[in-house]
Image (tube, rainbow, N blue to C red):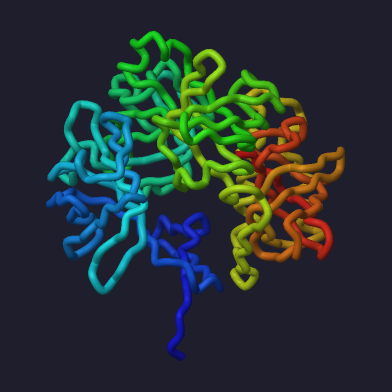
Length: 437
């Protein structure tokens, strides 16, 4: 019957058949009918006006109107600066837009507009040899070939990881080749012929530009800090974070660190989420006692974890979960072993098999902050649950038979943000896997 409903593509659960070149999507229906029709798109700017721009989208037949208002963040990669106007946008710029889509007018009320740049002053376009883009986490780099765990791409790589050549001779808008290491997030532009990818531009998230590197104040290498905001000063655009984790343990867990976000790109949200109780990940240059952030990523809820998002997809049977879980266990063990963590970090396949025998192929997930921890259990302050409803803002997790990805048991700590996959027995979430962000 005629009614309103909200559907979302669960991209992480798409399956690809290399034989037929077919992609099978997974679609989830949300019960929240108040959700806006939000869109993310890319395209070249064809017109610039005081309150809007027009673009030719890569995947849209019509010219689209992008409305820019006081709440819109316009970020220019070339200058690494943000505004709320169209003043810095020029015809020919290649932009990424995110906002609310109105089908009747082919327009978008933009939440953010990002101007891509090739570090030489020219904008990306469909005819540029660096039109292909891929983002992800570094698995390894031997000085010649970089292996990337692909998280986003504007083409179909055909596998979860991608081997990328030409990195040593590529341009680095942010960071340098000598700083490349496993675990970093990269944005790479280059050439893709359907089989191989060659890099032209490599950007390390949170890395320093040449100008910043040559300046005295940015003489220190970048750092990564995760934690909960304890106080906010909007006049100086700084926040104080209680640290839960930091790059190479530079900041001790529980320490307070001041983060300056005045020049930062705010990922996944707006400045309104910089409030007490928000869990953030900040990347930038450590200068004296302040982290000069270049990127701030929000995890979970916006503000305190007083509520959580519940996604009921229990009817969506993910038949390949068991096999993918087996693959993840191998990858997880290899990654952890390579990083030099303890034996606890290596996946225990016997525990994994026992879990399947006891609980079957289940798919219950929870994300949140650790607020209590023992040798066998932990308690999560929830930001999101999927496949079950605990009926409370916290959940007890049994970690007796869990295996770990991107960490180990010893990596667990209070105020750490984690993702748990397992089986909800009505009182306790029995963990199959614990994943660190």
